[in-house]
Length: 196
Image (cartoon, rainbow, N blue to C red):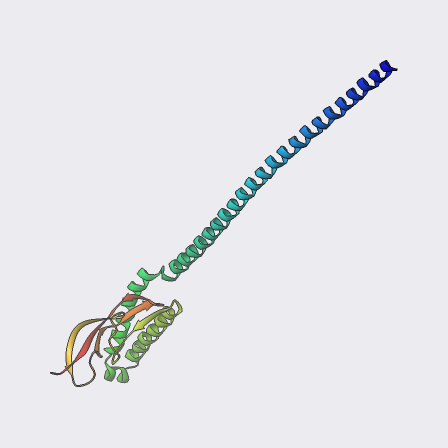
C-alpha cells in the first residue's frame, strides 16, 4: 500500500507537472499573442499616420494643380484677349487717317459734284465699317474732348490757360485706343489750366 501510495503520489506529481507545464506554455503563448498584438497595433498606428500624411499631401497637390489650372486659364484668356494688340495699334492709324480724311473733305465740292460725293460717302462708310470691326474685337477709340483729364488714357502734350475748370481736355491732337481695359495708344491732348 505504501508503494501504491507512493506510486499515486508520483503520478499526481507528474500530472501536476504536466498541468503546470501546460499552464506555463499557455502563459507563454498568451504573452506571445499580446506581444504580437502590441506590434500590430503600433504598426497600425504608424500606418494611420502615414496615410494621414499622404492624404494631406494629396490635398495640397490637388489644390496646387487647381490653382495652376486657374492661373493658366486666366493667362490663356488674357493672351487671346490681347493677342491682337500689335495689329490693333497698326490698324488704328488707318482709322485715324479715315477720320482725318472725313474732317478735311471739301464740303462745297461735295455738294457740287456727284463723283466727289460718292468718294466722300465711300470714305465715311469705310470708316464706319472699320469702327464696327474694331468694336467687335473690343477695340474702342478714346476721344476725350471736354472731358476731365485722365492720366491712365490721356497724354498731355500742352497746357492752355482757360477761365473754366482746370484739367479739362480742350483739344485732342490724336485720339487714343484701348482693347477692353488695356491701353493701346494714349490720346494726345491739350489740357486747361486756371488763368492766373
